[in-house]
Length: 188
Image (cartoon, rainbow, N blue to C red; front, side, top):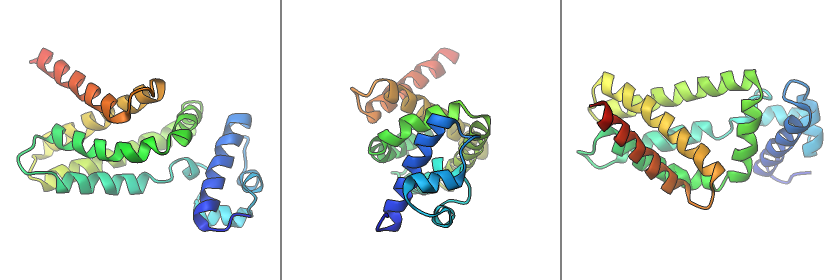
């Protein structure tokens, strides 16, 4: 039996990933996840409201960290630079979670209900980032565009990092934002 709440949470996440990969998301129950993790189903529901959220744990913390980084950024930086710096800070957390991130993306890609949840979480993240940029004095239109573009670029860099982990996520982020600048210059 796990000795701490955090240990139980990690075991539930690992069990869910394993079962989703073996059986598929739709054919896995919370009871099976709990049994594999060595806890009760009641313990599962103490940690997660449903079997989808076990894959999205940490999203609220990431959103809070990113918006705090945006708020704390130096004055005078353009919005995309503010976001890049915030994403670089978050990269350390994501790199430490690689063993969960890689199979998580595969399960989400294979499951329509999870793709829908992922899109909803991405929309909430871009709304929060846009709000944080607006708090810095960025206009609504530019804040929304920067947040959506920045989040898409961040996601692109994460996928590239998972495919090529010889370089760190921060390096992939720099490359993706450099590519974004090239694209923007070509459009002008």
